[in-house]
Length: 164
Image 1 (cartoon, rainbow, N blue to C red):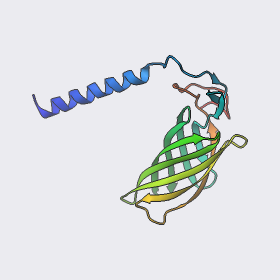
Image 2 (cartoon, one colour):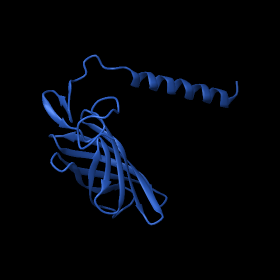
Image 3 (tube, helix red, strand yellow):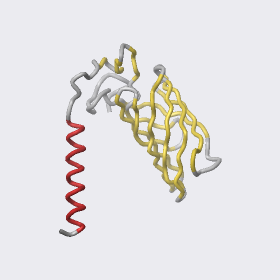
């Protein structure tokens, strides 16, 4: 057998396995309520959805499962566009902590993220600090939630600022 055949078989097997993992519904999934996830009796806001920057050309898209939030944050300036992979943990209701990674000007960079989600203004206000690479590239940001995805496993319209 050729290496390319083995590689293709391995990739196909992995893809089918991952699809099967995502297709099942947990037997003890929490009840979902409107724009919030109810986990262990505590309301967790739905921070998933599409966001836009308050200034400049910024777009973000986040998915959420309970208190885990992940997605992309993209900013454009002139002809340069940089996309960041973002992972957040939502705690204490509206506190976000996480990490981001991107290639900026050819250098691999990771950043520590801290933020707060406003359930009144539907905004994430936060700050970033470099962990690896991109020394001195720190700052703050505010992004406004334009629409939401439903809490849980599937992206269907629901209550919130407006469905995506």
